[in-house]
Amino acid sequence: MAHVSFYDQIARNKRNSVLLAVLFGAAVLAFVAAIGWLMVPEFAVLIVLLAGVLVTLDAWWSYKFGDRVVLATVGAKPADPIKHRFLIDSVEGLAIAAGIPAPKAYVYESGEMNAFACGRDPANASIAVSTALLASLKRDELEGVIGHEMSHIANYDIRFATLIAVLVGLAAIVSYMFLRSFRFHDSGDSGKGGGVYIAILIAAVIFAILAPIATRLVQSAVSRKRELLADASGAALTRYPEGLASALEKIGATNKGKEKVSEAVSHIFFVDPNRSPLDELFATHPPLKVRVAALRAM
Amino acid sequence: MIWGIVGIIVLIALICVYYINRIIVLGNRIRNAWAQIDVQLKKRTDLVPNLVETVKGYAKHEKEIMGDVTKAHAAMMKAETPAQKIRAATGLTAALKSIFALAENYPNLKANENFRLLQEQLEGIENKIAYSRQFYNDSVLEYNNLVTTIPGAWFAGSMHRTTMEFLEIQAAERKPVKVKF
Image 1 (cartoon, rainbow over the protein chains, first blue to last red):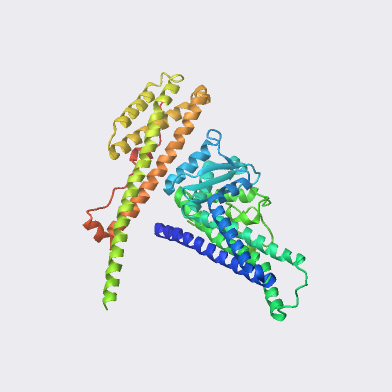
Image 2 (cartoon, each protein chain N blue to C red):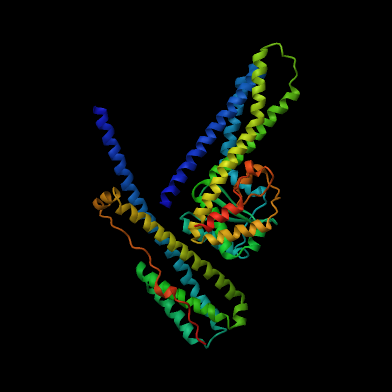
């Protein structure tokens, strides 16, 4: 049973990754084409081609090197074979339990207890934990956290998550560029088009404002469900849900929820690095209490 | 009409290919899972002489426990089949446990840098052995489910594949470690 849904999950993640990339790429191109046609019709084709090349490059680049970018943003360093022996052992052990190659272990400096996994597939994956997490968790608890991250890797959540991080960033950039371009665009050529022109332009403005919000909503909705799934399959790896539950409780009691990381990558973390009053809508993780309760009910 | 028949034949062929491949893939996974266990067992066996040397310097007169470890190590070296290896490994696990329990009485040994490193390494390997067993048994369960349920059972029968054995955790492993003084 568990295995079937696990393989379903992998297939779904791979499919969704491709679907999301294609849909999003098409949406960006359509948007750029519409704007290009309205503003500078004579260069519209050129602009669309250029945008297509850029989007493709961006997608390829993030597929190849997305994990390094994410690791670099938090300043993660490879785990020390002697000082962090236990971390490396846990990562290797749980990789064996999950039946995947051992991911590379990283440590990053932070007072907040957190961890994340990144990469494009199990053979090219990394797990990073914060120094505070390493210092405060007991063996069982750390293994619980690593088990959670390991299942993100094993079922290809990481590929989807990296893609989302890039798209959230891209949506923000495209809409920002478009909205900014109004400042430089004077009303000199207002003679053509008239009503239709203005209507489409207004629609484009609304689209540009809503797109980043929409991608954030997708990001958080998709991410919250995944976190619960990873908790469950992580516990199936360690065969000890209590370890993960007590790790979550410790983190809930210690973390201030004010880590300085970009919102675009917040969904890859073990627990939400930022907490805000808008969490009901935008939180990338379910409340800790819900996660603990689900684990205790196993 | 003709296309309908062709379609059905293709569909049946696809289903056959799927199940036959699935049985082979899952069978291979079990073999691979055993290789994982074997690697960890070998790593542990290689560390034991080093541990014995280190402990000897501090607890020479603990003849019985040292003898147990040496015997268990020798049995491990001799074991060839998976079943023998698992049995020998269980003995070695118990013997190592009693050495580490023994170290509690020798503060100098416990403080020895080399000993601490070995203990950490061996604990890590012990954990990995447990996890690789778990993966082995998970793989066996999945494989057995496939070859005992319909339609997988039909294909397994024609491929002469039967269910595989689980790795049982031996009784000795469940018993608490006895330490004599």
